[in-house]
Image (cartoon, rainbow, N blue to C red; front, side, top):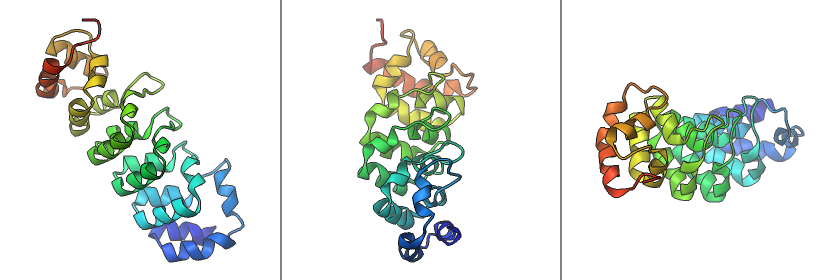
Length: 207
């Protein structure tokens, strides 16, 4: 196991293919409790070739949580490893839907860390992700606003107008911003322009 984990740290694909069939502990990786799998490590560190080979050899690792409750796609999304995220969702788009120990999808993880490319990759495969909420009832947009991630919030506003519509409480820009800034984001006014564009093309719920 130590050699396999080292291979994941450095992204050594040849070592992976050589070790995998002979590591007696490998089958244990998919059963809890799991501290970290090689796919978690490769996803965090951005070793795309290693992660791709691991996906081919042991795809069930994509559905294994580490000790923090994160799936590999959550780590890849948080750290902006967009190529790994793409390979995962292209192989199985349902991989984007599971929630981690905090009730967050991969889209929430990307939004919280301003990973705009990852947001785009996830939404391309699963547009419905923008409607998913955490245990606190927050969409990815709410998470972006709460964490002052302007790029992520702007991307979500411009590409997920139907979701923004669900956040509205009234027709004015002030109410839009208040709704988006429900968590106390001090950068609320910076959303005025995209919100203004939005109000022209959508009708708030209840109006």
